[in-house]
Each structure stands twice: as structure tokens, then as C-alpha cells.
Image 1 (cartoon, rainbow, N blue to C red):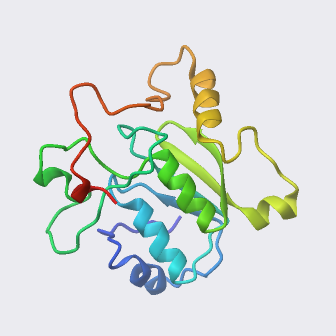
Image 2: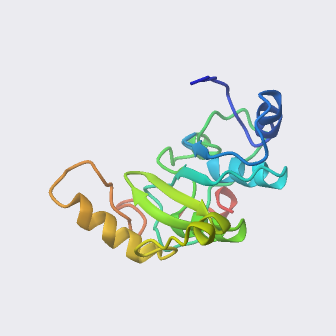
Image 3: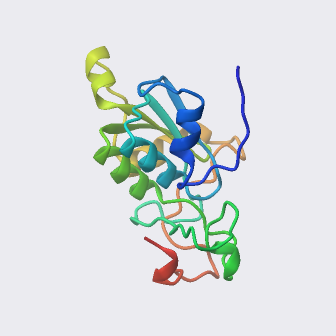
Length: 178
């Protein structure tokens, strides 16, 4: 493995992919930045990158069935958690399962697995070519139920799919969300 570490932002992700001569089509793209990985995926896609499989961390404190994502601001010197540390919401990061599902679908991917804090997407043409169909594919509620069932009795495997904002925490101001 040729592992590299960088502070990756939506503003520089494409530059890093190009500097390491990543081909437009590659096998696996893992996105776990505790913040704006949804925007990294979108920027890479806009630049023509089409990984076959994308694994992306979702916001475990965001209601899974709401279409919300944490807004990114290049104008603030904020590391990883976008604007959340500037306010009272250090728990707020990334995007909801529904938001990532909609993004993935719009980019030509199907959501096939939910495990731990990550979602796994497979490009639709790859699924068609291999004639693959997964249980609860592209069904957020179904994948949450399946993940809960699979993690039954094994603490820590799934933080669950929240259906509401965390207890004692109100919905964040709209200027933090997109």
C-alpha cells in the first residue's frame, strides 16, 4: 500500500488525486474526514473520477431520514468538522444517510451496505454488469433495520440510525446545514 496523509479539503481533493496520478476509474474510494466527505466525493466526481466502490462515513447524530448535510466554508480556518466547532455543536458533522443516499444516486451509485458509521456505495453499471442486487439496496430504513439486526447483541457495532435529533439538542441553525 502506498499510503499518503494530507489535510484534504473540497478545495484540494482533485489536486491530490491528480498529483498521485489516480486514474479516473479505480476500485475503492474511502472517505472518512469527520466532516465534509460528501463534498469531497462530489468534487472528485465533478472532476471525472468514478471509483467502482465508495465507502463514506455518515453523520451518526443526524436523523437518518432527513436530507441534511453540514455546510462547508472555505473562508473559515476550521479543521474537519466544518463550522461545528465555531458554534455549540461539536457533535454535528458530515451528512445524513438520506442525504448521502440522494447524492450517491445522483452520481450513479446504489447504496448497498450500512455498517458501523460507514455507508458503502457501488456504481450502478458495475452492479448491472455483475447482475448484483443487495438486500434493502437504496432503502435507508431497510438498511438501518438490517444493520440493527446484524449488530444485535454486539455493542458498539452500530451507533444506530437516529430518527430524531439527539436528546437535549435542537435542530441546528439552517446556516450550518445545506
